[in-house]
Length: 185
Image 1 (tube, rainbow, N blue to C red):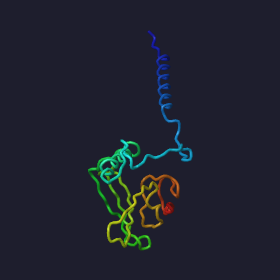
Image 2: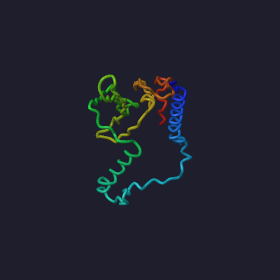
Image 3: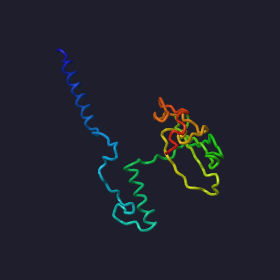
Image 4: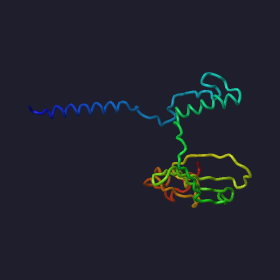
């Protein structure tokens, strides 16, 4: 009996082609990057619970609506936050009590998530008002270009991790050329 290699090969090829095409057609048709093309919409009332109850006091907000809003963000936007890492360390790597022309106290902190060479790290740049006598409100922003881009101060550490090209960054490596490049933000 003679083997049917051409027929087997043809069937396998057809299976791969049609399976691959179904995967391609299952993907979305495109992405909407231009906000001017977004259809008009109305955001839901923040002070109305999912069951229609109006929030009229702090108890309803903290006991009912706030947990609903947080759950909506988990389900629809950010996903669930992971549990606190077992090995979490904070290391102050630089501190200056006279930054921003003497108006602020700067602290650069590396947050280490995990142990060993595979541990992730997050670079945190903190400015505190120098004359503050008590705790003060703060803003936390995510910076994908490196902390050194927010101010031209040469004491701000340049990241060694991958960074998106642009604003003086080439080959996905941050350099002194990108220092302060996003300070207008």
